Length: 63
Image 1 (tube, rainbow, N blue to C red):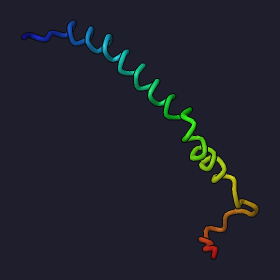
Image 2 (image 1 turned 180 degrees about the vertical axis):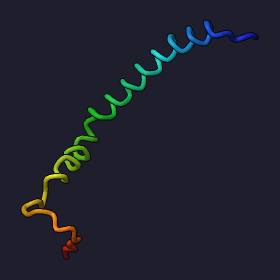
Image 3 (image 1 turned 120 degrees about the horizontal axis):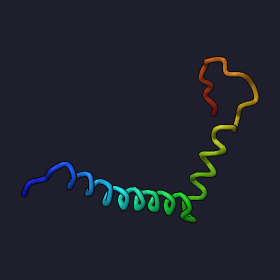
Image 4 (image 1 turned 30 degrees about the vertical axis):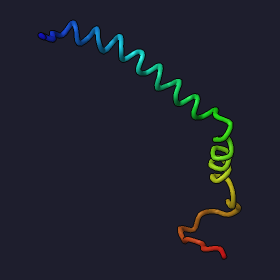
C-alpha cells in the first residue's frame, strides 16, 4: 500500500478533526462533572488564601 502526500493530508484532516472534537468533549465532560466541582473550587481558592502580606521568600510552616 503506497501512501502519498494527498492520502496522508486527507487522513489527518478528516480523522484529526474527529480526534480534536472527541478530546475537547472529553475535557468538557471532565471539567463539568459534578463530582469534580470541589476539586476545582479548592484549586481556585488555594491561590488567594493566606495572602495577607507580601512574599518574603521564606517558607512559613504552620502547625
